[in-house]
Picture 1 (spheres, rainbow, N blue to C red):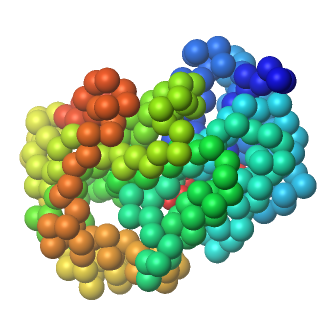
Picture 2 (cartoon, protein in one colour; picture 1 turned 90 degrees about the vertical axis):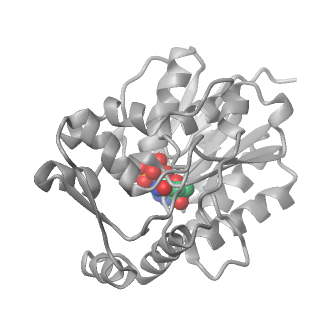
Length: 289
Ligand SMILES: NC(=O)c1ccc[n+]([C@@H]2O[C@H](COP(=O)([O-])OP(=O)(O)OC[C@H]3O[C@@H](n4cnc5c(N)ncnc54)[C@H](OP(=O)(O)O)[C@@H]3O)[C@@H](O)[C@H]2O)c1
């Protein structure tokens, strides 16, 4: 049998992909990293960059040639299902032996909401393809706080969200990358499994405000918004209707206490606890200061 050791990473310039590349490079595993724009390539030992677009199936074989395994991630847009299914088909044609797909925590092909539905449709296609796979369904990510929320803390020591007092076990992107690394490099028992990745504790935004306050040694306040106000702000910021509808439904579920679940998957796979909000906030303190 051909001795294939290489791993191809889609989404390599993104938030999770960058962390995964670092882990694979440190472990001296040869990697093909995919981007649509070589100017975004990050130089790392053992990482070869290939320009390819998931919308263009003919561009994918160079990215997949000689690869044992694939990490599949892309941002959600209007052609998401076609793009991700192109990679699954091309992986099969190139005799890839294992595909790890980053999915939504609430993926469901019957969902009325766009983001869970499209992830669910790709999951169904992947399962039906017969390609050995692992699905990593992610809960809301802590790094989502590094943007509007952290900027607002920086500027006015307040932040605004529409989740009421509802809790969610947010997961650190570095833990997702570590799980992906483990599953890609020791696939054995992870083949054809689906894992829901959460943090170890569900928290609400009053708790996050207290943790940020402790790290900054200054009072930071969470200001609750109504769903109507949050929807208006997202629309004004130019977000497409399908995204606004999905994010408001996530917030509504959290307000209602339906998002407060915790799973042991990160602990089970990594053999250590998931990253806490205290550690996350300390590590990214400069973004809030
Ligand atoms: N945010 C959350 O809380 C959350 C929760 C659960 C699941 N998710 C899922 O996580 C994923 C986003 O992860 P992330 O934040 O790490 O991504 P990200 O930082 O938004 O990066 C997106 C990546 O996708 C690549 N990409 C997009 N379209 C492509 C195409 N046509 N061909 C090739 N590459 C393409 C981009 O590559 P180039 O631009 O370099 O080509 C980039 O590396 C989404 O699928 C989302 O649904 C997010």
